[in-house]
Length: 207
Image 1 (cartoon, rainbow, N blue to C red):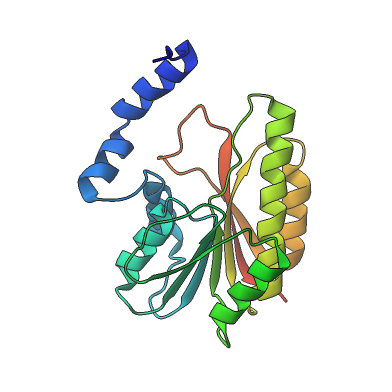
Image 2: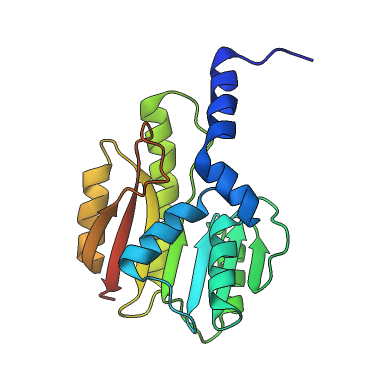
């Protein structure tokens, strides 16, 4: 068996000692990411039973699992990812690249006459360790999520997206401020302190 690099060994040690990882395992959640969404929900109340939520790039399913448990069948959770994702109660899943026209149309077909009151995305690319490249690749995913939200949200809808700080951050903020009445920056406690990730919560879509 090949030896792990020092960096991967450090990551594994940090991961295994992470209190949010331990808490997620004990609670039966698929990822520690649910605690980021849980904190945002406590402060901003973006999840409302009886509404429709679309989770972009959902695998392994932590966010969708959290919403499904919260809704308890009162509302819809529609998740999509290019990767497979195991079944979750109360969650409809579509596998595919939502930037592909056929997959996008399939998502619209699933939605039917309903529009999502919330589009959320915790997507991130596989990081290469080159800051400029990683930022550009992550912002490409953000742009795709914004495009989807712009095409599907009703007036007054909300959008939550993970972003990484860098040179394209301010232009993104400006774009969102033209589309939504307010844009808030959130850094949940479950986000690792050394991470440059932030969450943007855009509220009240203008159409």
